[in-house]
Image (cartoon, rainbow, N blue to C red; front, top):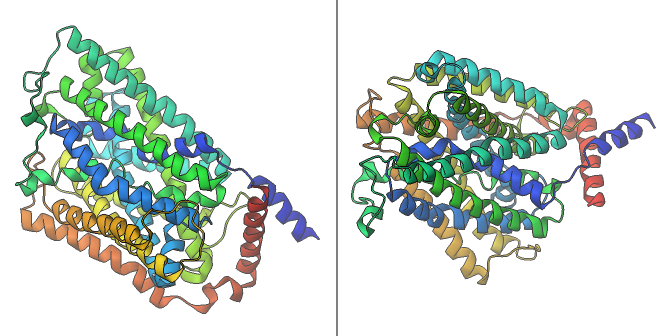
Length: 500
């Protein structure tokens, strides 16, 4: 009787469901970041073309694929569930591991941006100090890890509020401020205000120029991550694809306008990839109170982005843990349904990557780029599984009802799946080469390529080793304590579905 009462009490705390606006804002919180504007500004007007390429190569096939799979298999778990249904548990575990592990690398670059931006509210010189950046990364990540212990409702509120305050508002100020500065006569001579068709055409024959396409793809990478919350979205048949569409359109428009604004305001030669946004605001407002306030707002927005990623991928990993693929200590959740032990392990790994950031040779720009690229390469491996699962499930489980289905039958699925898969192969190759616009890593091109390939290969091997070493005692059915915890969460999920 006591156990049922406890489960019922716990389920009440976990019956919160995200609506269309909440889901759209959580998606934007995970994807939208003005930290990418300075890197986009490196290529001036060509950023429009690069953004279009990223939409065609990545965004369209990934949105179509994740919408079909998330509405066909709407339970929590996302890519793990999809790949497991298609190819089995081992490969599902490998796919969700890649999705999760890339985040532990990638958010060092996100939080380093937080540190560099916050420096403008304290002392701008700190933006080039790696030790300061390390301290901020560790403090912010652990603070919001513990805040997210409070559950999905708190997570949604924080992510939604922070993205509005710290991303949309500063982005609007930057774009309007750049327009006013241009109107007032401020102008960077190397950035033409009256572009010709030639100004939009990138040099696609140069591999080191093409590699900048990575940052534009990274604008949208993770669009499928919110599928880990599929079981917590109201009317998923309507709200999931529509929410992704809304978030994608907003992201495209603001990113192009924001990148151009930074390009108008900051000379390329002096552009800092971490602090470039604040260099733009300094060009508009100078050094003073207004710039410091904006720095605080942007810091809030970036912290909200980090908060949204702390929970998303790890919830997908929790589902695979409940299938016995990870030790029992990682399967436990608190009264709010949050995988606290796994989140702590995640924090330890992020702290490790922050130390790697400090130890990498070269300056801030080159260290930032190396980690960004490694993040992208690891993530691309996960997308290989996702696109293959789309095609496989059309044959293996054709009778599963998909509320959103890619038109064209099996041919349509093949077109989208092959489109996404080939695009990922292309992006993987170009990402291996350092862009000519970013130098100072102290590595030769062969050393740079070997470093990235080694990191990607090791990351891919780890989940296969873990799966090989798994024990029967990891399975909840063979462990009384974990079995009770698993049953409680199953009850919570069932009651959530009924309440929907």
